[in-house]
Image (tube, rainbow, N blue to C red; front, side, top):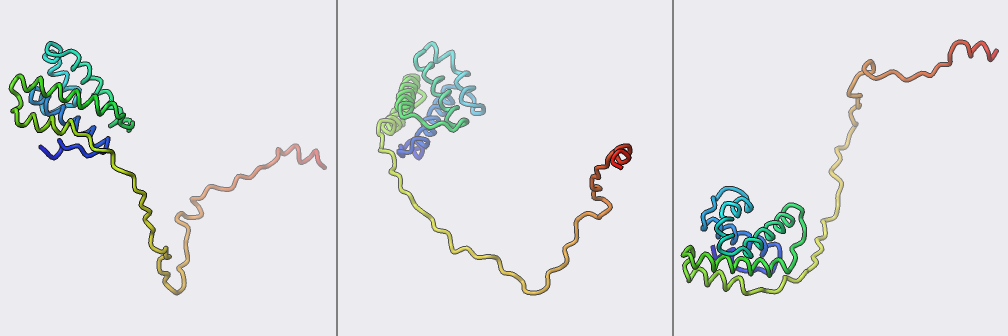
Amino acid sequence: MAAYWERSGDPLGDFVRLTFLIEEALERLGAGRDGTLGEKLKAVEAYLARADSTLLRGLWEFIRIRNQVIHARAPVPQETLNQGSWLVSRLLLLLEKQGYYAPAELSQILGALKSFPPAPSFHQVIIEPERAQAPPQVEGKRPLELPRRGFAARPPEKVVREPWWRAFRRR
């Protein structure tokens, strides 16, 4: 589990890790393992509304942004990462009070949420293709290419004819 609690500096990767943390916390709170993140939050919504309504509104907003990032391929805003870390910390502290997390496990997660490594630098790497070569040609006579359908199956050419009375008028 510690593998996806470490921050990497990649905004999308960190955003997905925050989503995993929220999903795991909701499952520990009593939501089913199957279903979407919204369905899991809906399952424990009554409890969270009584415990912390601000946290519940923030989680719904996080899910809305998550759907835009995952489905509409929108970029991850930096403030969403900060807000998401705050939401996860608040949710985990609420669950720790209820005894769903051990203090050692919780301190490890919260320590990873506080550390923000810088975003990775961009390095442009140009991959040169090998020298292009044509496929080898077999020397010799090429076979006669026949049409795929017979001549009788082809549609006849459209012949435009004048009406018969115009032929008499021109004479």
